[in-house]
Image (cartoon, rainbow, N blue to C red; front, side, top):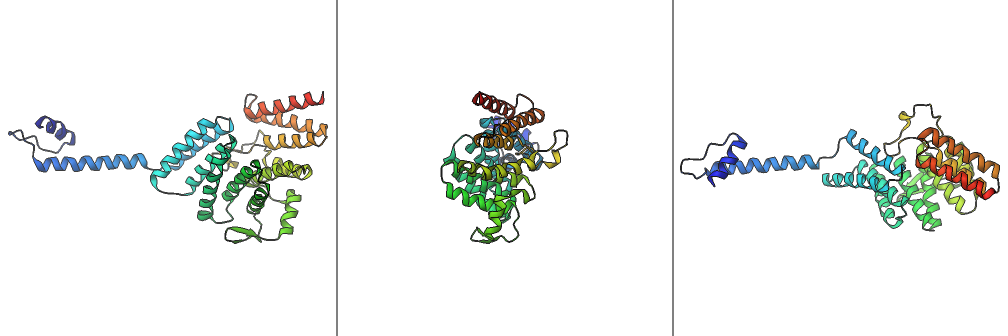
Amino acid sequence: MAHAYALIAPWFGFFPAAPASGRPDAGALRAAAIVAWCTALVVLSVSQAPANSSDFDARMASAGRAYRMGNYEQAESILKDLLSEAKATGQQDLRYAEIVNNLAEVASAQGRLEEAEPLYKEAMALRLKLEGPTARDLALSVSGLADVYRLQGRYPEALQLLRRALKIAAHISDTRTMGGEFHGDERFLNNLIQNPSVVPGSPELARVLTAFGDWYREQGQYDVAIKMYKKVVDILDVPPDRDISRLYRTPWEGGYNAADGLIRLADSYAVQGQPLEGERFYKRALSYAERRFGPQHPQSVQALKKLAEFYRRQS
């Protein structure tokens, strides 16, 4: 025991040496135990401290890049680490909501819809609580859940959510809330759906209109879907030589990207029997993706495959 005491005492630096009897002083041992306990608490608190803003943004950006490249496992791993750290703090703030929402995005992209649904709902509830019913981030969670419902064939529920998301993203001034539900001028909303070009553009609106276009396309209403997709492209098609870093909304999103909208436009025209328009937008999507991301990027590969499939069908 005296040997153990001799090892402990120098480490803390201020404890007296073991007495000649070989028995350590009880008071000194108690002091050593207290210091060790406090040190452990400090280490634990540091390990559980929330990531600072720059660290959080860097890791979220890394997860977003992995997600956009189709590396879903890597994206999910980063997000789960961030979630564990956020839970350790006991705080459910807006960053927590962002993590949960993006985990839902990853699950949905992999077809794990039953897993994505409660995550979107959790993000929605938290954003509603912290930011209110007209927050733009809420629109992203609502449209994400609408996508899940659409893919599950729950079309009426999906449409209800999309209309709610559109009111948020379009900043409709007459929107009122009652128990979290939205009420307003339905005629104005219907006009907005039929003519989205009148709405000021934003990344949130582009996301909502993409989901809306997918809904209408699955209903066979390609004319409305095309209007939606055209507005999406109008919002997101930033010239490749322009510095768009200041336009990035969040590290997860990584900036504006019109490739998906262009491909959806091409698909819609091709199905409608308008091959010239279909070919034009497939080529435009390929050119855009290669200039923006390079020829090996998944979006460039997807656009090239789409164009090749189009030519095969035409032949």
